Amino acid sequence: MNSRVLKPRHGPSILVRPLQDGDIDTVLAVLHRLTEDSRRRRSGGAKARLTEDELWELSRVDATHHALVAYVESDRDPVAMARLVRDGASAAIAFEVAGDYQRRGIGSALTEQLLAEARAAGITEITALVANDNPAAVALLRRALDTLEISLEGSELWIRAMLPRLSPLHGATLREANAGYPAR
Image 1 (spheres, rainbow, N blue to C red):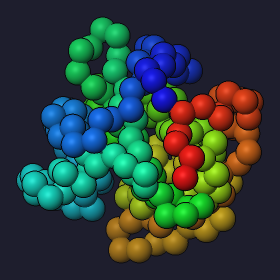
Image 2: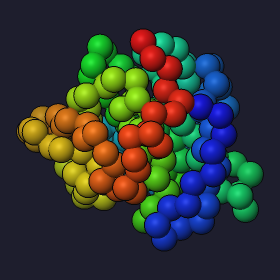
Image 3: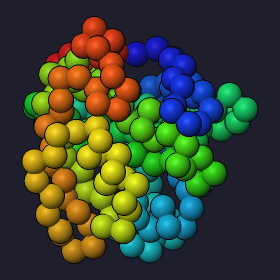
Image 4: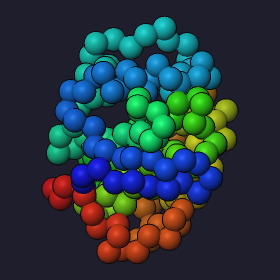
């Protein structure tokens, strides 16, 4: 995928670009803009900082790791990121949105773009770990996916879902969905 402009339902237009392999600066730029609650939810508890190995893993892009970054035109720094880690026809998803840009549809637009690319690559099942006190993330996943199973694991919800053939979030057609994610 090359850069693409998306218009979230109730937020500013965003420029979406794939993360470049090893781009720790972009990962840190997004993570530094998260709220305290978002940081806690993202790491499963209080964590002052990520290790160098964790940062490298978050910035990894290859045949099994894919990440998209969102930029708002009026803001030169990245405001959101969504990642997939593929394992055959299944993939784990994670996403972060900067505090100032939450609840504007940016996470939904970015996640739906990532899911469209996953769909085009033949991924059929998505898993996610979400803090059980993060109803916005759970709602986004429920809108985008056909949920099969949700179970509580400590303070997190483990979600397993099927990736629908068409986008329920933005009504994308299959042709629109078949862009960008490298086939495996």
